[in-house]
Image (cartoon, rainbow, N blue to C red):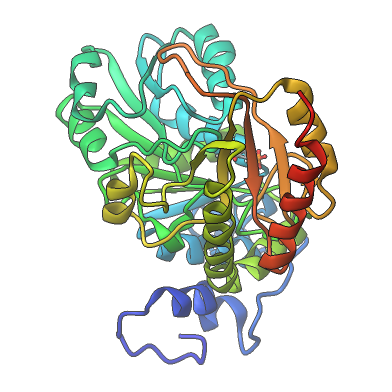
Length: 392
Ligand SMILES: *Cc1c(COP(=O)(O)O)cnc(C)c1O
C-alpha cells in the first residue's frame, strides 16, 4: 500500500502502524502526508460546489492530513470510521453526545477517568440524561441495571487509577440485548494491544495525547466506531464543529509509526518495575493487570495482547506525609499529570467513587514507566524508599 501496491495480504500490527494512512491517493509519492493548513478549498466551477462534487470542500471537514490519521486509526481499530478530536476528553464527550438524547439513561463504570464522570454529572444531566455508576467488575450483572431507557454503557478497561478490568464482551452482550451501545475508552491498551470493537464494543476512543502522541507535546483524541454507531458519530462531530489543527495531527501520525516498539518497551520495563515493587515490604499491592496476582489477570490475557507502562502502587499503611516525601524524593520519575510519553511520571491518586467503596491498605500512587533505563528507574525508587524509611 505504501509503495502504491495493494496485495490484499493481511497486515500484522507493526506493519499496520508503519503503513496506515499511506495510500498513494493521500500522500502521493511521499512517505508522509502533506501538513495542509486550510480553511478555504477552491472549486473549478459552480457545478462542482454541489455536495459530493469534489473530495475536499472545507478545512474543518477534511484534508489529506486529517484523512491520513483517520484512515490509519480506522484500520487499527477495525472500525467503520474515525473522527479526530482536539483532546481525549473531547473524544469522550463527542462519543457520549452522539449516542444519547434527552430522557436516556447511561451506565458508566465507577473507575473511569474522572472528567468523563464530571461530563455526565454536569453536562449530560443538564440535558436530561440520567447516569448510574456501576462496579467495573460487575460482569454479566450489568443486565440487572438496564432500564428501558438505557442507551449506552461506558467503560474504561483497565481504569487508569485503580486498574480493574471490565469484561467488554459481557458488557456488549448485555448492552445490545437492551438496544444500547457500548463505548470503551481504550487509552491504556491502545489498539496495538486491545481491539474493543472486535470484542463487541460499538465505539472505541482514545486520548491520543498519551501513547499515540508519545512525546508529551500534543493534545489529541480519536473516536472510532463500528457501522452501528459511525453515522451518528460523524453527524454529531460535524454538527458540533470539532476539528484538529494539521500540525497536531501530523505529530499524532508521527507518533503512531513507533507506537508498537515503544509500547513493547513500556510493557517490559513496566513489568520489571512492578515486579521489583512487589518485593518491597513497604508496598501492600501493585495494581498491574500483567502481574499473575492481579484479580483480572486472566481477563487481561483473554482480551489484550499486552500492557502499557501505567500502573498503581498501594503503600502499606503509609501516612499522607510519608507518601508526599516519597514522591518528592524521586529524581528520575517526574511529578506530573498525563502519561504515555517517553518520560517516567508519578502522581498521588485521588479517587472519586459512588457505586463502589475503594478500600486499600494505604495511599495509592500511580506510576508511568517511560523509556529510560529500567535499572535507573528501580534505583530511583530504591533511593526514595531509603530516604523515607524512618518517617512515620
Ligand atoms: C488523559 C485521559 C483522557 C483525556 O485525554 P486528554 O487528551 O487529556 O483530554 C481520557 N481518558 C483517559 C483514560 C485518560 O488517561
